[in-house]
Length: 175
Image 1 (cartoon, rainbow, N blue to C red):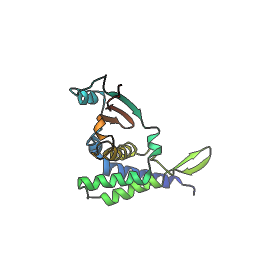
Image 2: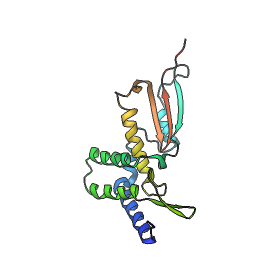
Image 3: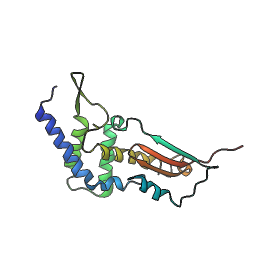
Image 4: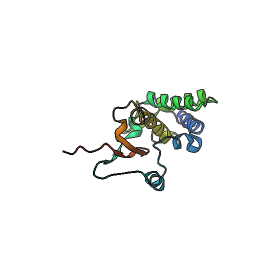
């Protein structure tokens, strides 16, 4: 199926509607526990925290190609759960429908051929960074901040700017 200009414009409108409805003011992203806004924000988070270079590991990580590797269904569910958790029901059904279109109906052209993006979120979508942050925030809620996670007690600090992670913890084994 080839898209005409009017189809591409409609998808752009859905993306804008999803972005405006879900992520206005970045309020949802800023409320995530790992969120870092800028350098001064991480410095403020780190000030006063205990850190011992001898017994703890300092770790930095990057989530490779985050936007294009996000599972679409899980990303949509993460946004829906966040709506439910915050009690945001006004227009949520419409916004989630728009987000579904943004995630499922993304097409791009490469080398003269048109392809449908099967996974991930388009890096050009107005809501891409917020969807990425909310998806990773959902992952962190399950695997980092959950007391049942196997290494919960070993992570003393975890913070993130979109796909860049800064963490410390996990006592070193010494013999």
